Length: 116
Image 1: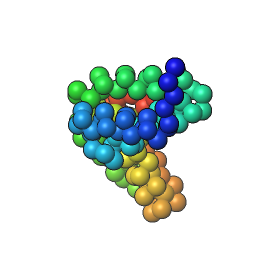
Image 2 (image 1 turned 180 degrees about the vertical axis):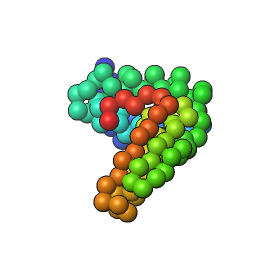
Image 3 (image 1 turned 45 degrees about the vertical axis):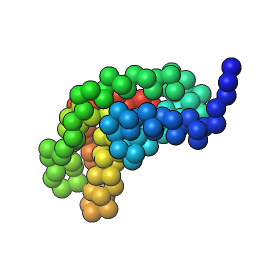
Image 4 (image 1 turned 90 degrees about the vertical axis):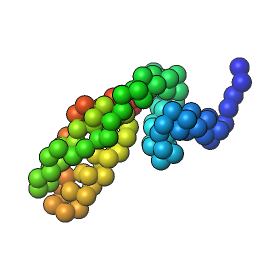
């Protein structure tokens, strides 16, 4: 069995995703949880699960905020990969928390989160 350095594997994953239409930044957001899951011994959500996301790349849409009121934001993922939606939702929650002292974000209609 051949071993591969983590950085090399992550670079190959990012390349595979950019070829399929993700930006390098989106590919980084998606690749990182798979690598981290594998390194933590969560093989059920690690590298072998990476190939599952290919199905989700066919129906991707742009996530959008459908409600923004006080400290709460609701995001419609529009069938985007869960990693990308969760990254957006986290940024929104941080912004709201900085403004109101707490930030709550709900997220619907996204595809595959893996291990968070």
